[in-house]
Length: 109
Image (cartoon, helix red, strand yellow):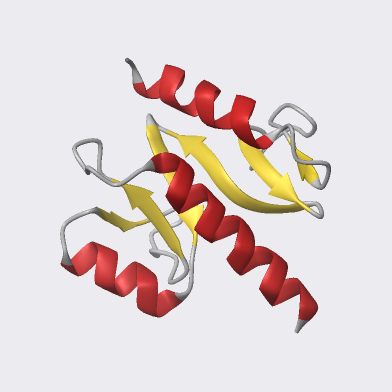
């Protein structure tokens, strides 16, 4: 299965949730993103799944070799965004669910 197909499967799973908006609802940055309450929690960029997670969680996943901090081509890696390594055994669905819960929780603060 290609990375594109993996992301399409993820979109199919999450777009069934009433508060989730699938990719294609906007243009530019985030046009290939899953959103919850209009906030991006997972996206497909340069063939990788990119998820928004707490900085401490991103730090741990990077340290364990599951990915790198996402850089939106601005030269500065983002603290709360992880670009998942293509060879990571972690479940994309579980990471996306964790990211969605993080974004929803951040919205409530």
